[in-house]
Image (cartoon, rainbow, N blue to C red):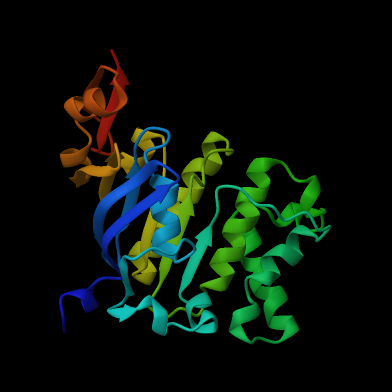
Length: 262
């Protein structure tokens, strides 16, 4: 086994520039199966751009590999069964029912119509959206749409069988407290039970600390911290990156680093 084949994602020398603005400057990253990795950083740090590069949506000169194989050798049909992306925003405007949007995720699986509907129902229930399954998608709130797309991607990855990559771009931005935790707990479960490599863009440092195995912090086009929550989430890092003074303490029950304003 080569070094790169043990990683779910390996990317070297990622540089992204729009017009005269550098977004990412020679960033390299490896992501392990079975781990939740949180991408943190201030607005404009390049988190969503990095996710687009790692998903292959944004083409660069980076050497991008999934499970040791070049991104170029993955056919769209095969990749759709192993890599799922929940976007920050959706432009879907057709009057599909919520259940029909989730069913779209099962298209790569080549299931019968009955099996697709059963799978969609299962994941609608998983994300607590089954009562709204018959609602037109455009009528849903922002948070409800986020949960529908999460259910769609979970359906898409149902047959991934170990080689699984789940990407979530600010999946909690429109969610209430309970659904924020439910979404990240499901992502955590994908890592622990399905050996998925999960990468999630977050702004909430405490949610990142609670649910992540690894935290990568971007600032000024570079990775400035990379490690476990206790290694990456420090008062010095937060002061340097966010320009804000905090206290770091230990969560009294769960033991993760808890960020408190001074």
